[in-house]
Length: 383
Ligand SMILES: NC(=O)c1ccc[n+]([C@@H]2O[C@H](COP(=O)([O-])OP(=O)(O)OC[C@H]3O[C@@H](n4cnc5c(N)ncnc54)[C@H](O)[C@@H]3O)[C@@H](O)[C@H]2O)c1
Image (cartoon, rainbow, N blue to C red; front, top):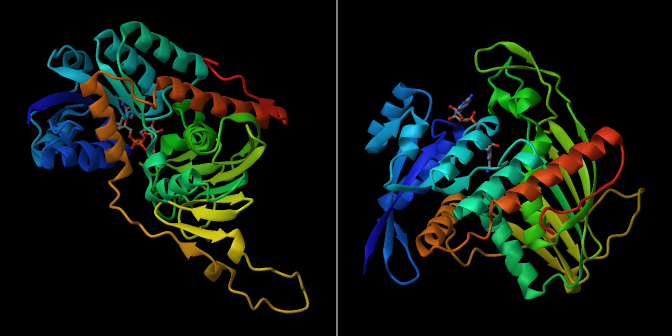
């Protein structure tokens, strides 16, 4: 059994996603477990180099987690020939220029979504990565959620028959910041800083839809700002210039309709913070982050509409949970393992920057539909 090490430059590790999901739950967890177990029995250990703007915060993180290298100078980190991968979890508005630098330094690229703030910027990244011949990947974490893995298993088994409808509900109440501090960063609510529900979530919905159900052909969306004023991390009041909710209908290939509501201004009355109901001729399912419950055709009850009588049926109890039947890794870690294995093998990662551009295309089409009040057909990049 051979052991190799991949050194990863990680930028944005003081942030919410960069720290918790990518550094602690993925890269450090992989390191603690002795590396990625590769298909041929070899092991690939991982060694992070932390990059950020605040030397004190980085030093504290490095000391707490026993990381040897950190710097506030991205160019210096990129000049380290022993590091072959650059990862970016900075605020979206900072991403493009850092990734271009990393590509220029010949690093393989792994990044949070959205990959940039616009489609042309995303295409610039794809072109640069192709010309440099570097392996590239974009976080597709939702595909690795236990609930969606169970849903994928159902689809692959033919459980649904012909799928014709998907309904997604995503979101929760994000506090305004006056009575209680907001639980998400304030830049998320300022368009000028790269915020906005559509730019944030449509890239996720695009890869979920295209990998599970089929490509989106057209979108009709309404993006709105329900909460016009919020308070930031310093307690200062600011104007929320970005959309905090989006209500969308996606028309997919194969006559499939997907409707997804995304909102930071909704109080949760659901089993999980995201749920997708999938309806097919032979059965239906409701998948969340962890769970997935089903109702096959042959056990579908027959509801009868009668407004004169109170409901006696417990509709929720008429669904059956799919058992786990497997141990699921943290979704972010699972994709890190797959990306690093691809880098080690020198093969493309399936969820690449071009997929990231398609995510941005869906976001732009959604915003265009909302602004113009019309259905927008999508002409996919690269097709
Ligand atoms: N995959 C997911 O489910 C998911 C969820 C949330 C956010 N995200 C994405 O992750 C990225 C980070 O989001 P977050 O919620 O962790 O944000 P955050 O504000 O918590 O972290 C942002 C990071 O960028 C750094 N940063 C902030 N302003 C900067 C600037 N001007 N220059 C350089 N660095 C700067 C911060 O120091 C911090 O390290 C965003 O692109 C967001 O879209 C992904």
